[in-house]
Length: 206
Image (tube, rainbow, N blue to C red):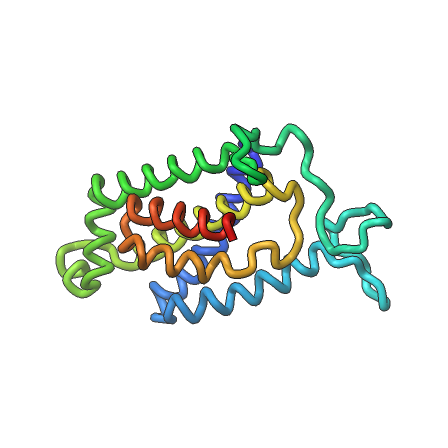
């Protein structure tokens, strides 16, 4: 639980920075988040770098000298997500439950709360939302923070439920897949869950 909260919190901080830039400078969130991707790749690569050539090893690198791949050590057994059942060669762990609960919470937040109503107003027409009394800057920063938190939670689930360690580029393509999943699901939590399952089945089956 602590690891999941840490991943969510780190993601909120990381996602909130582009939100602040969007809210107070008008910087486009697509551009800033892509730029932050490169910063994140370099930063995490340094954290698990093996060193050499006059450079010290990264602070989170696996100390095992037999492991030549830049990565962290395996997470402890107590932090790993339990496997619910096996489906072919793919273990189905508690992450699927966490994902479904997260989708349910997002659905409730967006469609059943005053904040969600204001959020949808900001998405459709920021000027009309501002005229109606919605704090557009606050909604933008908070929404980007929540989105970043969910992304951090997803990466934490992948680390704790499947790989049991972190290595750079372990999630190549996931971000771009998520764009297609969101479009196919019409940006609705229920549709996103169904389209994500479709993509997951195709990826595992291939």
